[in-house]
Amino acid sequence: RQRVQSSLVETVFDRAKEQLPPSARQNVVTLVGIEKAGVGLIEAAAEHQADLIVVGAHSSQKFEWLKLGGVSRYVAQSSHVPVLIVRPDQRSDPTRPMRVLITCDRRSPASCPKPFLERLAWPPGTHGEVMSVFESYLGEIPEWLRENLARESGASSAANYDMFAREKHAAQDQLNAWCRSLPAAFHCQPAELVEGHAADKICEKLKSGGYDLAVVGAHHHNSLARLLLGSTSDAVLNHAPCSVLVIRDPR
Image (cartoon, rainbow, N blue to C red):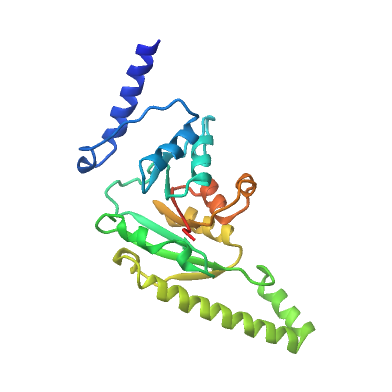
C-alpha cells in the first residue's frame, strides 16, 4: 500500500511540474506531510518563507467546478501571504492576451499592496483594468426614487447628495493616482469607479468581461470572522468564473 501511495504522489508531483514554466522547474522542492491538507500548506508556506501559495479551486462535488473546495477555502481565509486560487482556463483561444481585473477598496486602494503586483511577471500583451465600488449611503436606488426623495427632503437631501458627489469625486481622484503607480499593463484604460454593492458589481463585471484573473485585497480577520461569509473577497472567491489572486493587507 505504501508503495502504491508513493507512486501516486510522484505522479502528482510530476504532473504539477509540467504546469510550471521551464525556468521554474529547475529548483523544485517537493514536500509530503501528514497534516490535513489546508493546515499543512499554511505551515509549509511559513516554514519555507513562501511569497505565494497556489491552490486549485475545485470542489469535490460533481458539477461544482466553480465552487471552492475545503482546502482552497481554508488556505485563502487563513494565509498571511498572497494566495492564487486557480480555476480552469476558459479561453476559447489560448493565444489571446491575458485579461486581468484588479478590484480595490475605494477607501484605501493601497489595501491591495502594489509592491507585490510589481514583482509579478505579467505576460506580454496583458490587458489590465482597475475597478472600485462606491457604496452610497442610501444604497443602490433607481434614479426616479432618488428624485422623489429629493423633492420630499428638500434642501437637506440636496446637501447630502452634494456631499456624496464630492466624496465620490475625491475617491475617483485617489483611485486614479494609485493606478498611475501600477505596472504598465494596468494603464490600458482609466480606472473605473462604479456605484452600488461592491460584491455584486465586481462579480457582474467578472462574469461579463471575459477576465482570466481577478485580483482582490483582503483584510486580516479574527478566527470567528473567517467562518462568516459576506465580505467582498469571499463573494469574489465564490462566484468569480476565473482564477482569483487574494493579496492580504499587511497592516
